[in-house]
Each structure stands twice: as C-alpha cells, then as structure tokens.
Image (cartoon, rainbow, N blue to C red; front, side, top):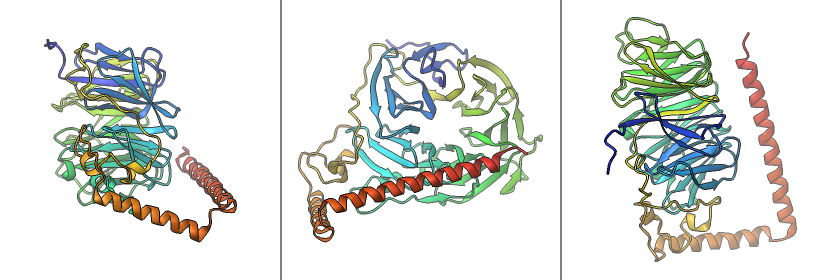
Length: 434
C-alpha cells in the first residue's frame, strides 16, 4: 500500500562529520528527517541515486564507494572498491552507467555487468565534478586544470579499443579550477553552467560548445544551478552569499559584472561560510543551499527569504532536491535488479574481446546477454593477438624490457607529481588575498 503522505520531492544531504548518518532524506516543506543512511561519510560532489533503487556515496578520503538499497537505510549493502580516492561521482539518469573521477581520470562502469568500460585520461589535474545531461546522452567533466569537457556517451562507449575517445567540446575559458557544473534540460540541446575559483560563472551551449554568457563576481564561486525554466542562474559564493543572475534581462551582454538591480539580479544572505551545493525544486519556487557553516537552508526564491534551516554536524558536502523514488518509503520492496560486483580493471572482455558479453546487446539494457561471440569481436580479438605477437618479436620479451618499462613508468609518476605540486603552488599564489 502506497504512503499517500509521502512527499513528491525530497532533500538528500550529507556532511563531512558523518556522526549521525552518512546521508539523510528530509521533507523540503517541513524540514522533517524522513530517512537516514548509516556508515562512513561522503565526499563533496559524490552522492548519487542510481535507478531510484540505490544510493551511492564515495567515502571521504578513501578508495571505495558505499552503496545502500534505497529502502534498507540501516544496512550498507556493498562497498565498491576503486583504484584510488574518488573525488566525484554520478550515475546516468537512465540507470545504465556510473561515472567516477579518480585523480585526473574518468572511470565509466556499466551497471548491468559491473564491467569497467573505459578510463578517460583527458584532464591534466584532479577531477572536481561530473554531470550527465537529463537524457544520459552526454556528460560534462570539470577539473582543477581549469577545463570543462563535454563528452558524447555514444562515442565513449564503443568496441573499437584502438581509438581513444575524445571530448566533443573543450570548454577552456576559465582561468582557475572548476568547482561545480550544472546541466540544464533538453539533452543534447541543453545549456551548461560552470563555476570556478576565478570568480566567474559561464553559460555554454552543449551542441556548439559556444560560450553564451560570462558573469564576474567579487568572490570565488563554489556552486551553481539553474531553475528548470532557466530564467535564473544561482551562484554560491565563497563568502556565503548566493547570487541570482537573471537570464531574461533586457541589458544582457555576453560578458558582464554582477550587480544587484530590479531586473532579477539579487543576493540571498544568511550563510556564514562558503556555499557548496545549490538545487532548485521542480516548480522553481524553492532554492536549496548547503554550506560549510554546517547548515542546509531552504529559500523562497520570489521573496529571497530563508524559510527553513536544517542543522548538520559538519560541513555540508552534498545537498540536492530530487523526485522521491517510488520505493523509498516502501520498506518491503526490493531493487528489481541486484547490483553486480564492479570491476577495478579494464579486462579483455570489456574491450570486446571476450565471450559471453555481446557489447552492442549489453548497451541496450540491464538483462540483455548474447552467449555467442560476434564476427566483429572475433576479428578484434585476433587483431589484438597479432599486435601482441608483433610487439614481442620487435621488442623482445626479456627481463631488460620489463625493467626499462618500470623505470619509465616511475619517471612518469615523478613528473606528474612535480607538475601537480607546481600547479597547486601557483594556484595558491594567485588566489592568496592581498
């Protein structure tokens, strides 16, 4: 029997302390704590709902992802062990894929099999955020290298392992690390907002990669979101202010400096520390904000008044308004499909070389499996075998080669570390207050 009093939308939030719970579900209209999920604590930009049936949260400072069935709140169901510390995490809206940022690499898993399909190494510094479009056709990655990359999922998930996937667009107008990304509605026609420490928020078009708007503020911007109708962009500042920028202003130019006025450019005041998360309700009337001042606030957008404050035990790392999943308040229900064990490595079977995983079939849904190896997969496997034989005949298979390879790998790791240290040092110098 369905609970008729269950809300249509809920707030999902997490803090860095994790004393009472890892993450919790609140009623946005009353502030009542409806559910809480225990075990560990989740890092920023790394709490996501998968298929309306699981909650995934990357453990703060550790190399694994916590998984809860959405109904069984008191029991951690699974820990997905990853190759490194996860800095950001998201699931595709269609429930077929999970993306994680680990150092400067993007890892893409297929949910139906748990296979690691691809590792994308296109960023030069650590990832800070990952976002899918509402139709799951594209995703956008942002990093500390000041870049936001737009990826077409279909070009990333492909059987040809010899071709390295490239982003559809490289958005390179920011001058300091990207802090947050928000994808609007309309799939491949969507607009994307990016926020940065460089004190700007920029609005882009996914289809062309063109920058539509750049707004300069007097503080670093830590979070960004759009309302569903895209009348406004909301920007969370490092000083606790939330800036509302009108996208319907008659005097809008491509580059502008934020100023409060009567045309919809306003400031929400109340937080005492940087605003880490922003989210707007489906009807566009409520704004949710999460801050390092250990509070989540609900704002009435029209009046700019804070109508509710939910205290947390630590800095708020994640806060979002989501449609309430159908099974969230039905304690006896179970996920339709069990979550498989997620792979940590790119195995031959994920590259279209193994038997029993017809790649094209698996991309269609959760339960499609083809026991026969296709002609293309067989050709791909034989080609890889030939390449491996050629490599051995040319380079030898002796101990000297192995030693040389390990020496080069160590040198690459050292150079990467030096590059990262230099970059962080220069960023600190640039952002240090006068």
